[in-house]
Amino acid sequence: MERAGLLRFWDSSVGKKVVMGATGLILVAFVILHMAGNLQFFSGSERFNAYSHLLQVDLIELTWLMRITLLGAVVLHITAAYQLTMRNRAARPAGYVKREPQVSTYAARTMRWGGVYLLLFIPYHILHFTTGTLHPAFVRRAAYGNVVIGFQVMWVALFYLGAMAFLGLHLYHGAWAMFRTLGIARPSNDPLHRRLALAIAIIVPAGFSLLPLSVMLGFMH
Ligand code: HEM
Image 1 (cartoon, protein in one colour):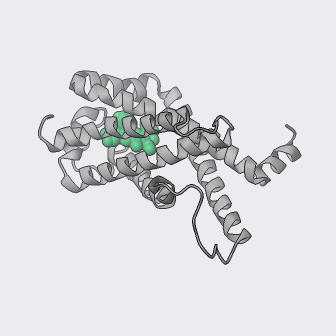
Image 2 (cartoon, helix red, strand yellow):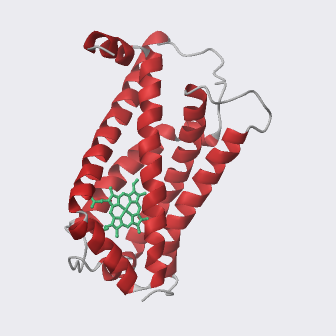
């Protein structure tokens, strides 16, 4: 697509939705991989620290590529979401007389606040476990101990669990909406894409939550 075509695409509402879906897909792939990697925590400190070492030292170029891709995806995802919201508001400033949105699951209604919570969570999380700036006893490349000590602070563990709840809701509605935007959805009472969205939305936050929960319950030292 030449430059003018790209700009026209970005300018259209469908274009912004496709950008949201495509960047959402990158972010979903990342959280699935990150959650699966985190389960190494239960293989003990040696395995978990070796995994962290692999990402932070041996594959650092790949880690940087991932960081840049994620940052780009998050910026585009949020910009498209913000602009679509503003466009919808401008199209109907007075609101519906009887406001009954077509899709009104709890997940759909929490997209914006859930998105804001996650937006606060991500920088906190990086300053907590990657740079250690907001960690009480951070040791570089000792990810296992950093996670155990990090989650021994009750409010921090609860903040993470809250983020995982919002992540689940966000993933559910987001994955479902993406299937519709990309035209994969077929009319049905119990469509496969809805079950797939539900499975991702439960498995990913549940897998992540095992870490703070296991530390809070005293299983991991
Ligand atoms: C209970 C949930 C989570 C735990 C225990 C966890 C744990 C960690 C740890 C230990 C690191 C540092 C790894 C290292 O030493 O290389 C890390 C990095 C990171 N995590 Fe998580 N994470 C969780 C959830 C999430 C979620 C939900 C997201 C995104 C929405 C996320 C995004 C990231 C990012 C972007 C990095 C930085 C990678 C880098 O730049 O090196 N994490 N996480």
